[in-house]
Length: 149
Image 1 (spheres, helix red, strand yellow):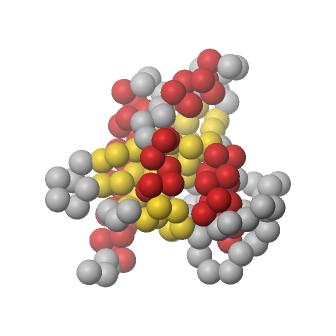
Image 2 (cartoon, rainbow, N blue to C red):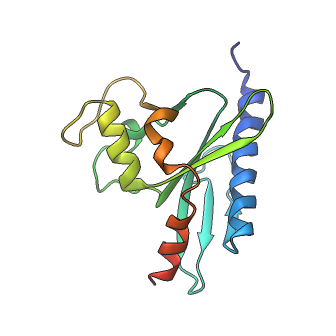
């Protein structure tokens, strides 16, 4: 069944709020950015007031559209610090979280595209949940980022 734009909007909001909730449990200050043309979904701030950005992608399927190489044409294109993929189970509405750095997401996307170097691709990039399973609940990547300051 194809989702309406309204359905997608609520699905995306559910993912963003769920991630903020998880970060709050870990005593990380997180703020959702609002608007139709935002460049980042969540901003987190460490104890030294340094900001980090998070791209949230939410899905109810086993695939999530990233648009990775369509948006990040080179390794130097401004990008989020982290990616969180939220998979919401359609029946139970429970969430699973997959947390990656931008560099880890690049590696996953390159592998999915069978790429050996960074370049633009045609179509729209996506990843399968099975490709990112090892990143499930890797909340410690935020903690390490904050501890290494």
